[in-house]
Image (cartoon, rainbow, N blue to C red; front, side, top):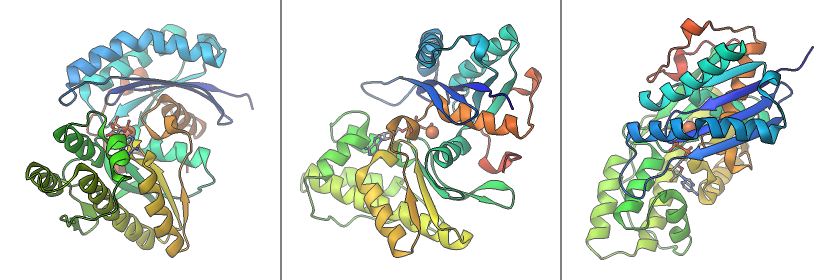
Length: 331
Ligand code: ATP
Ligand code: FE2
């Protein structure tokens, strides 16, 4: 069987990524261009404008580092959702242009599922429960009854946004996750915080308000608050992950999303897994944990190999696509 090379485009939020992967799963390029702001949240129109600006350069850079030309590309994949409409449209437009202009088949991919598929490619995990923790998303995903199901999720903000908002509030800048992690490592004294798990879901809104109030009261150090924040928020995430493992009868936990870079989260996950004789998997390349094009390319290849095809008229973006809306023919 001849090998297919797929070019994958990621543009659900502030990252514009181009990944190039071959059908053996070799990542030939994974170019990431992230739009960042000094203060305030991300404005969809501005992120989309960034994506338009870097698009050509990212494609050229990716082809260059893969050492191939566009003629060698046999499939174009793009993330069709969920995400911000403005941003998704740029990636979809680029994908359609490449496809039509060069007569390459095109396929739209679910962003959340691709975080799980890249983990299955790069670690020995076969049928893991995914704890997907990024800026906007916080979900526990498992393959059940022929579909990827969301077993639990945040009822309000994603854990990454929660970290970023708190970091901004205490004046340590953006992105907040790594800075909170750094400060947390300097403390080991726990300040009591609200712990909010509702059934299989978590909520960070009340925790965020409580933390801001504690900081404003000037009675607690940044270090102690960051330490306590991590212990609390990560325990909440791992409680629902553990329950998902038990409920689904699975013994592999996979971490994905930018917050999965956090060493304390990884350590707590490792302890939880050891206690229940499960295995923990964390891809060791930061670039495949955060939003990236390689995961989109690989998922596109899996779909294509399973015979899934899309006409150009079927490539509309799906900003609100649910994980369990996706038909999975490749497993
Ligand atoms: P999404 O995937 O939901 O569309 P995104 O583009 O924000 O959103 P990622 O690129 O996967 O997602 O992750 C970014 C988030 O990861 C930010 O909120 C950032 O603070 C967080 N993050 C990065 N490194 C760390 C770390 N070491 N500890 C905790 N959080 C981290
Ligand atoms: Fe993501």
